[in-house]
Image 1: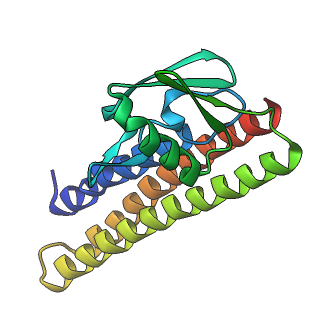
Image 2: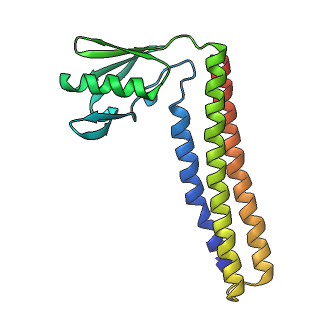
Image 3: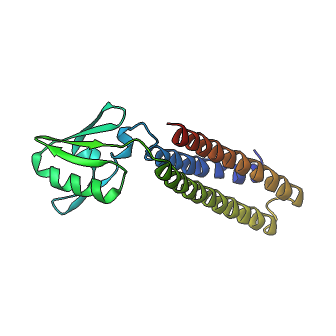
Amino acid sequence: MSEYKKIVEKVKPELEKAINFFKSELAKIHAGRTTPALVEDIMVDCFGEKLPLKQLAAISVPEPRKIVIQPWDDSYSDGIINALLKADIGGSPVAEKDLIRVNFPTLSQEYREKIVRNLANKKEETRVTIKKWREEIWKEIQEKFKEKEITEDDKFKAKDELQEIVDEYNKKVDELAGNKKEEIMNN
């Protein structure tokens, strides 16, 4: 593999990480159907530490608009409820004996539009990350050219290949965001 191809290939794992992070962020967006992903990573103050909810409780979805959280210990309940309220996930937590129910209302058009704006922000953040990696790799390519480790032809081939990869990942971001937007508006 030529030197410039090695440099260009280095960007793929970083862009995959950006896509995977974006997917995890999308899973946290309430779009009509609830999933444990909406709450599992919410950080809960527990005995002076911040722990993700999934480490403190069992999380289940018995109905399309309801999440049931069963803390491993009753002493976690207040912290979990406070964390859920702070997280502003769109549902209202209610403590019942040894569990917490989070009921989600049917999404209003206004709330759907708010979610779509949030989605647009997350999409833009991901695109900025992709752009940052493109610039970093392009800088490295130019350095290799200045140090005469790659030819001018290779520099321009690398630029084109890098742009193709970036376009491919930006397209993935657009598709993921488009699918999530459709899910939000149609559920």
